[in-house]
Length: 87
Image (cartoon, rainbow, N blue to C red; front, side, top):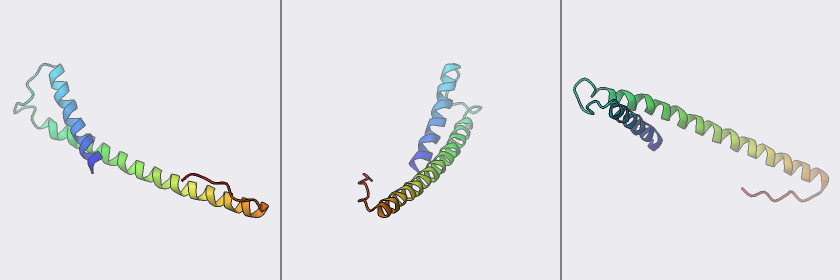
């Protein structure tokens, strides 16, 4: 959740920065609705990025377990002790 809020805050800060570069007022009735819009867009990007990270971590853990199992089977077939792997 903190990643989503962080990206949302980043979006609002980008809008604030954009208005500063354009030398326009930060808080006016015409531009006030842009902050939630930018925060929503970048917050949804943060949500997507968080899910991508979770899927990658899951895939890497599955792959790691498969490789460790393969090493154990190879060591058992050759009669050697399995190599020590830092987890």
